[in-house]
Length: 71
Length: 139
Figure 1 (cartoon, rainbow over the protein chains, first blue to last red):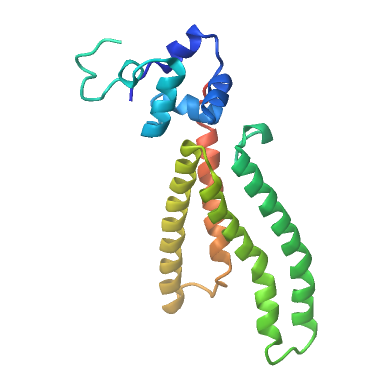
Figure 2 (cartoon, rainbow over the protein chains, first blue to last red; figure 1 turned 90 degrees about the horizontal axis):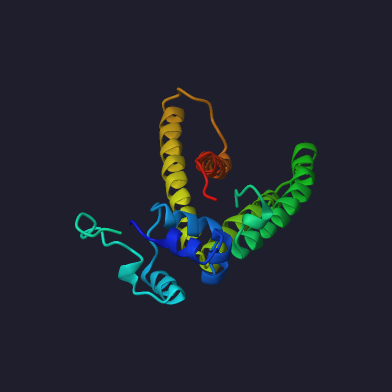
């Protein structure tokens, strides 16, 4: 699933390790989510959204909307 | 468990690795004298069975550690990876065991002790982890 995680992380000058520590997941997990290899569970997606202070829809692009929504 | 560095492991992976290493140490200490006794003495009665159980217990502990790891792992991505590796390894190992069993039954292959099956299971997981590590990593 496409997402803006890398952009949001870069805006805060966080490494993947930094973001992982804040989310209580591993650096590898952050990388997998950013590269679209892994879609987070709903609880983790909510934690990500709350960390960045954004709705989930502004971080993750719904696959059904991907063709029409520009990031 | 197959990360390049100890610091890359999650807390649950480190705990599992420590448990497995201790159990392997116990196994390495227990097995040789049991094998020697079996080879050089005429044990009878329930003794061979007790010796076999003693040899198997550390290995059973390793499998119990796997189960504990899956329940302790809080990182959902690593839990998913572990479950995927276990599923592939289990399917491949069971398939190989079935094929080898029939080959043995039809006299096409020699007898292989069943305790090699778990080793094949672990090796397949290790192979999967090596393949995963060879993929390009993130930052």
